[in-house]
Figure 1 (cartoon, rainbow, N blue to C red):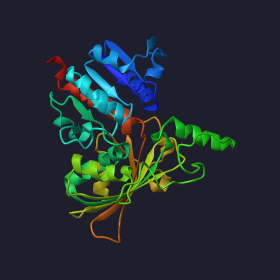
Figure 2 (figure 1 turned 90 degrees about the horizontal axis):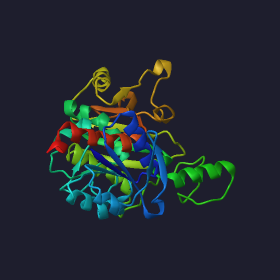
Figure 3 (figure 1 turned 90 degrees about the vertical axis):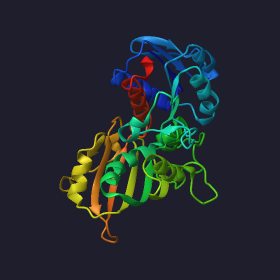
Figure 4 (figure 1 turned 60 degrees about the vertical axis):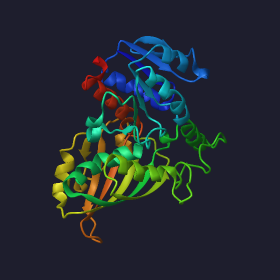
Length: 330
């Protein structure tokens, strides 16, 4: 089996390689692909030196699976070229997420929807993935009427330039800015571009992607905030359900959900934090409690490593699903 990783020199690309190794992902040939400026760069992986190649050469090599993490424009231009060649493309950008002809996949939730004809598959937004991993089992049992979510997002979601900005600010050095304001000792209520409705693209992704993956009848209101954290995204979520519930039943339900880890022991100060989600694939949930101001409502706190389950891990899991279904044998 031949695998191509597009965006291999980027932050998420590096995590992709880590996860391929950790999960012992099967491949016979691996092509590491990046922009023209990185062609010829050497990358050491599994005790072997790989030379970075360009997109044109990667298409010609005919990989079975191409994993894209190189931005929306690159995906829009090149994913169809791989797909036309018979390659399964799994894209980590926003390019194809709301395309009605493309599946938007979280394997634990809707992975069984994949067919052998799905040659371009979209990976959801990082914030959406961790939220829906927790919401999906609750919705199946009780029905979710409304979601109010505030996200507190790691700077790693912006990329290396944001890490550099924070490091420069620690040192008192002026340098290139990822954000319009300092991020050190700050919280910026601005993730992605603003839209005409006053929301940002990031906030609307949480609504639109929930409708596509889970249920279009769920009402979602989101606020996305960037904070000077590296280990993962955190989300404060308020749910209004269609049916009554007991908190202990919610906790048991989530504790038995694959990919979700319950951390909710306030007597021992055990709750999710990005400090401890870093480098882990699980979605952590805690601070689960009834909302006494509204009937059939509750609050949750959800944390996950946005570079792993929010991006790289989910993408690799989609690739594993394609293999599991036997689509590469046809």
